[in-house]
Length: 428
View 1 (tube, rainbow, N blue to C red):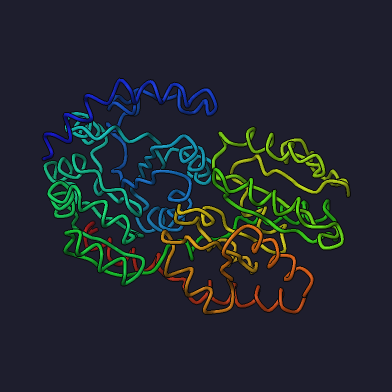
View 2: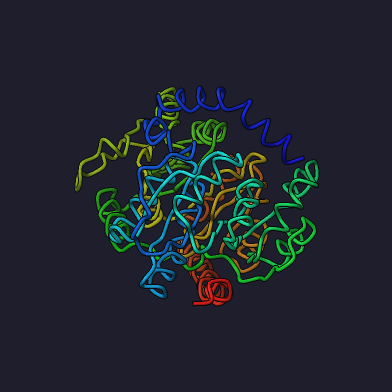
């Protein structure tokens, strides 16, 4: 099965390269460091400190890894850390979060999952441990880690019922990969049970590392500055929206009368930067909705009262957007995409609205709703209606925000529990 899988990778590589180059038109980062994706690296591990390897595929996983990476570097001061990604935005986020560590952190792309490339990667960096974030199970890489005697841990692990069903199509391949995991640290008991069904054996539950992510003070300060520039207007944030979600949100906004909206400011922050221009065009199609782009605003510039929609077209500022808003809707949930991370908004004490599709964060969402910090809505029109209702009711909005922040604080501690489990593998 793995031989067929590897053959498929080699056959697909020319098309992967074409897609990579095309994607680089919108995101130039995809045209940089291409050799790393094939196992060729300029970094030299000779004579350097031993490396702990953390793989965080994209932005969400990189942010979730922050408290763990900080803890690893603090506990093992004689080690460096290799941080790998698959997306350009993940790599950029890693640089933004960890540049202050200097040469202690080496960033790179993970090579495509062929045996030869995986083996070359491991021979070059010689990591002491492989720590994979959330759902990153690559069969050839794990097999080569076993061969090179690199223990593999899957941490902050989650697996939805939907993903489990998909994985069953390649059960032999995935069971072999799961058997190579020395440790699995799941977010919830439900995730742990599904991961055991997937074939993992040493499975523990530690909670979500995302609850331990501390908002950067600089982002909180920036959010406060934005809020001052916005003024006393009520602010509804639509965070991490995905394709085909902005149109129904804008349609609902256009259908509402001016008396209902008042002086509402709607902030839309698309999940993927390559869609910023397309979303700007979509907002511009609604003539009654004057807009500005965040990138066009200088520091301290007051936002004109006529602006109805602000497009968040910047990367790495999500905490600032949350700090500036009154109510936050979390995107990826109006369509069957599984939803995006709601924990950052909860941690900042913001009332959270969430759509019907949240299988990526099922337990956190249900528990936040039960705690009174989040509210589920069936569609974009209901989201706008509930958001306006909260903005008009200051006491309800404040109570919901307090419940959200209390819920987030009660779920902290996953980093320490994960570190205790990893220490057994490192044995140092």
